[in-house]
Length: 244
Image 1: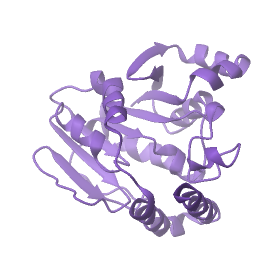
Image 2 (image 1 turned 90 degrees about the horizontal axis):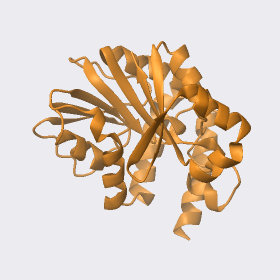
Image 3 (image 1 turned 90 degrees about the vertical axis):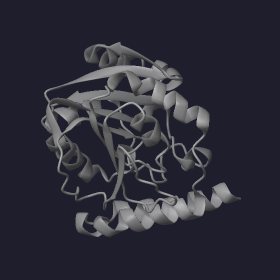
């Protein structure tokens, strides 16, 4: 019953976001995700957080300044903070029991306008974020993150693969994402977006259960085009690292 209620909430909210202007979304992202967290959010599964961290921990160094966009309940943020010099976590929803301390800072924002931050960052990351953005906001989001990076820095992006979806709550009710995953992407679509946003290049990975494998982008695009069934069965999420 709770899942049915969440689906109904997400479906209504997705329609509001899809029909909204960019100006309206400055408020909508905050209102919708704060309500979602308050009514339906549960704690992150410890095993999943560990697998996510294992997947990306090799990208970070002790000297790194890191920006995380869409940090959720900060479970992954806390893991990364143990490995880097400083991490700044951005989130649109109000997060309870936030304890910014030591090398971890939490900053609220509206999902559109990034706050003024003093530092340039070595790395940025977002886990399961881009699919929640209105498609019109994604390129601007990528451009904004790129501008926060130092030259040679990179943006680690993890987002569900469209072929194996839907991946939001609508998976139990629909054959397509009709909840708050406003758009689920393919590798080809995301690579095109990072290029149009001005990133120099992007590396593509297959990653599952805490392990990742780098594959040339042209090979992954070829597989998507001619072996979509293979992607549907074996690839749940995209992992792309876009370099400034």
